[in-house]
Length: 360
Image (cartoon, rainbow, N blue to C red):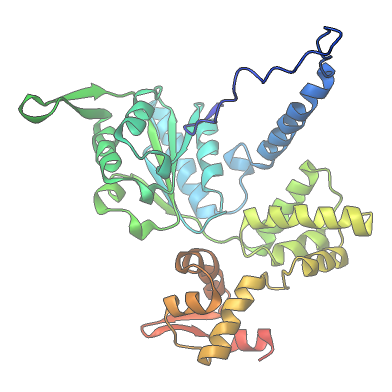
């Protein structure tokens, strides 16, 4: 399975500044070949390790049972008819595995996946070039699809419905519209804000699925698998301790595991137990419910300055020094999930459970 990104990396200059030759006329000796290749080799090993953490097949994907059931049926039906999978929209909080699911779909369909982000498709030629280059059956993954420009979105309409690209050649009275046939493909769109998508774009997706937060038991299984890949000894109790503080998000769970691994290597010198995990996460300001410094800051500001609310989101952002969008998309969903914050017509409110947890 090939993974192709539309973001181009900056190329390095072909030539390096020439060094002055020594007075003897001899050219300076070049560094050993092994020294030049070592950093690249290390980066390659890191990339392979990160790729190994992602599940490669739907059967290995942990959690999201409803989503897996729907996709298993869709994949089997599409393969049985010899057609491409219907266009899929995945929405939900960040870090729940939307990109991983797109890669898994490509593997299950026996094709490759091109990955891009909506902000990189600013000009019409960007998305035109991407669509024309698609091979039959290929999957196109667009992250943060709600941020597509109006022009790019309109180019997608005929491409999604009829696998056709309508382009305008010329200007004014001499302008002509031509249609270019496209290879059948599957568009997988990912967004954290499904309500920000326009209705014409959202209605063109055959499958619209929400990704939910993970249960601690599911995160424990993910952490044990990741620890095995990273060759990090960990007890089940240690994995459960990290899972409870991971905010229901696999990305956060794997990130915390790496930080606990660093702490264990330096301070504990052994297996990650429940006690070691708790000590390490305390150092990183992650409390037993997964709240970090910013979560506690937002709640404390609401309690101390506004008696727990109700208070508007912009007022909370100003008082806490955080961005409105960051609070809405990163912190608020989890605080509402665990019952520490409520949305009311008059504004946000802190619940009694949050007062008690913070010691007020």
